[in-house]
Image 1: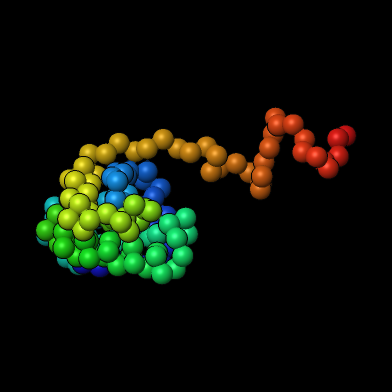
Image 2: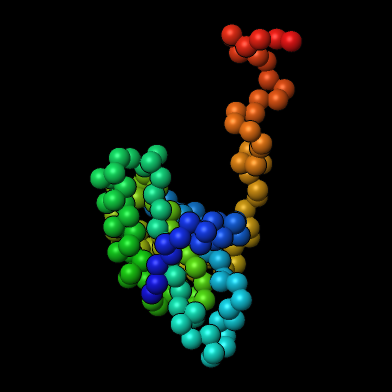
Length: 148
C-alpha cells in the first residue's frame, strides 16, 4: 500500500467531497483519474493509496502524532483487504480518536471503507470560497471602523 504525500493529492481527494464520518475518524475517498481498476494493464496504479492528516484543533504535536500512529495502525490492518484498487483515501483524525478503543477504531474504519464508494458528495461549503480575508458584507461596522 502506498502513501499520499503531496498536498495536491490530498486536495484532489477532498475536492471530490466524498466522505464518511464516524465517531473516531473521517474517511475521504476518490477513484484515481485515468485508472480503470478493472483492467489488468493498470499494474502499479491499481494499488490503493492512503494519506493521513490531523489538524491542530486535535491537540499539540505529541497528541497529533499519537493520533496519526493509531490511524496508521488501523489502516495497515484493514486497507490491504478492504480498500478498492485504484482509489486514494485520506484518513482525518478527530479529537475522539485518541481516547477511542482500538477495536472501535477498527470498526469505524471498516464501516467507512464499506460505505465510501456509495457516499454522495457532500454539499459545498460556500464560506470557504469567499474572496478576501474577513469578508463581512452586510454586517454592522466594528468599533473603530470608519464609516463613509
